[in-house]
Length: 190
Image (tube, rainbow, N blue to C red):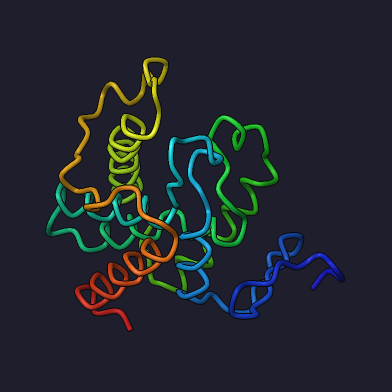
């Protein structure tokens, strides 16, 4: 652990981004952090958490590929790294190769912990679901999305949003953990 360089999680676990050392990957730490991290660098009309987004992606994968539990599982946990290294908007993230390297290393650790099978098919499906979620969210969270060409290709799925979209951090954490337990049970992962 690099002295004075670690990030402490809610439950007291330590993550050292310099070495990649992580004491424990804890679903409660992940749910707590993701529910308190705003998407879009906080520049949306209302607070919208990464946790709530992750639940939406899981629901979209379930709608598009109902028999593919591995994709649904990956969809829910696709942004789990952000619990440790936060959410960066894509236009910024692509400029930071060291961040991407750290994120990739964490993705492998989280995949190992939760038995996520990141193969080409699952990656493609989660990316599609993520873009459908973006299309859905952006239209409701921003006054103008005309410049977002990528979302024009994907129909929004407002029917999959939470009743009180967007919800606060406490509710988002509960939604995330309920979805985690549901998919965990369906997947047979303990």
